[in-house]
Length: 53
Image 1: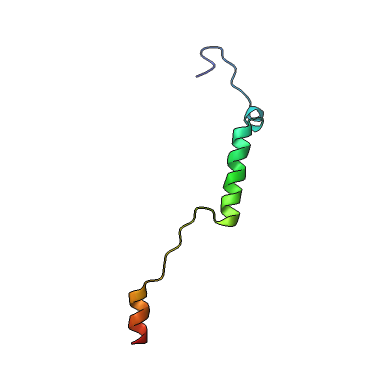
Image 2: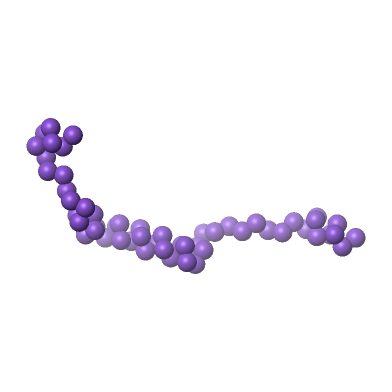
């Protein structure tokens, strides 16, 4: 579509110079490694009490 209006599309390297994209990648990897904002299922107390009785 940019060729119809004689607009040069930016190359992929333009996105690599953007600090926001790097910050997003850093946050993504930190959240993967640390489990940041992950919710864990809590054990149900009812099933644990039924197993012991």
